[in-house]
Structures are given as structure tokens and as C-alpha cells.
Amino acid sequence: MKNFSKKMAFAVAAIAIFFTVNVDAQTRKLGVGLNLGVPTNDVYNLAIGGDLRYQVDASKQLSMPITVGYTLFRGKEIGNTGVKYVNRAYIPLKVGGKYFFDTTGSGAYGLGEIGVGFGTESGSGTAFIFSPAIGYSWSNGLDLAAKYEGYANNGTAGFAGVRLAYGFKL
Image (tube, rainbow, N blue to C red; front, side, top):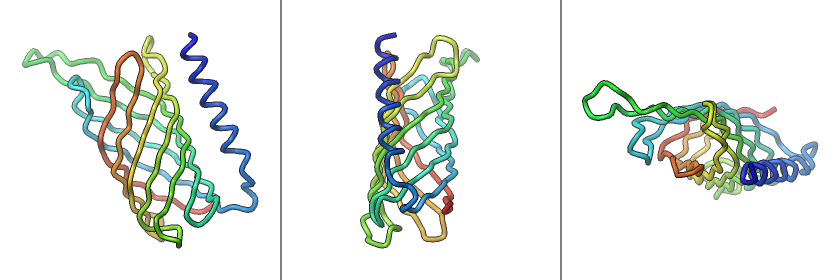
């Protein structure tokens, strides 16, 4: 319970800092993404999910995203027994920073996010999430990124994959 409280306090503080930005003077965007990856843990064979990303541009090159979604780790079959490892699913809530290498505010970028993942199954608990990515954002709203997303909760799970998204200004 103590670790859960620390993680929740961290997430609440990060979200509070995120919303203290003067959003009236900044560009706001909403993106819808599909995540697909290869799990880094041997008991899973696929990581798939979707997300919504709200993003506030602090400048042309720096944005602050908050992301919420759903991620499923699909269990592998144990040998040739017909029995599978249990699927694990999380609802991730992340905040971060996105830096565009071009002064136009589109093109290549680096992204770092941290947050918590709420397990959807009984007893799966809450995980600390860290997620670095590099990507490319086109001016028409398409976004493609290569990413890693790690989940730390009494062991580590994660995936290396891609995020394909479409974003639009609010």
C-alpha cells in the first residue's frame, strides 16, 4: 500500500504540474494512437493497445503530453500443452515532454513519459511506467514513433514497438 500511495502521489503531482501551464496562450492537440509491440518478457507474445494523448505546446519545439490508454500483454502458450500464460492488461496514465528537433514544431522528435499503469485483473496491482520514444510527426496530423514502454511492478514487463497516431488541434 505504501508503494501504491507513493506512485499515486507522484502521478497526481505530475498531472498538477502539467495543468499549471497557461493553456489559453498555447496550442492544444488531441491524438488517437495504436500501439503494437514485441514484449520483453518471455511469457507474452504480443503487446497491443490504444491511447488518447492530450498535448499542450509550450513552444514550437517543446510540448507536454498527458496520455491515457489500454495495453494488453497476450500470454504465450506453455510449450505445446494448449495452456497459455495469463494475459495482463493495464490502463496507463503518463505525463512527459516532447521535443521537436526542427523549429517548425513538426518533423523528428524525442519523447519521454513516466506514469502509472493500473492493472485490470484482480491482484495485478499498479505499475510504474517509463516510456522513451523517437518519432516523426507530419504537418497533416500523422505521427509514427518507435518506442519502449516498461512496466515495473514486482518484476518487469515491457515492450519495444511502434505507435501510429493521428492528431488534430483543438
